[in-house]
Length: 94
Image (cartoon, rainbow, N blue to C red; front, side, top):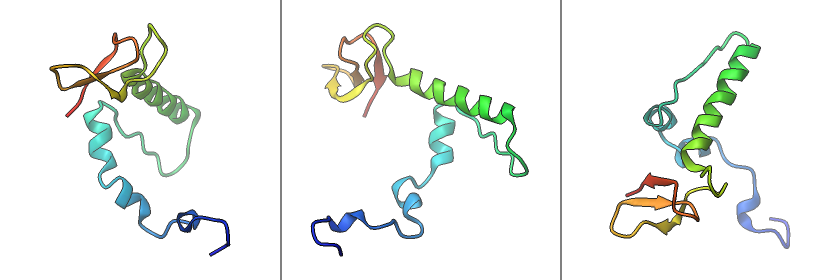
């Protein structure tokens, strides 16, 4: 360990992503996103589709009125929802 650095700054070990996010396909599918895997080559159309999926994901959490994202600290009273700062954008939350 290098003096002055936290122990957690070393490179992740093999399999770290699976520990952090064990079932990414299920999460993405539940958000309505579909895989666009093309193992042979990556074409411009693939990039466009990926960027479109990112925009869809972003729109799930970004409020068009205040421009802020939905945050877990903004709990909607009496509901299983969270909201953005202005309260217009709400998302189901457990």
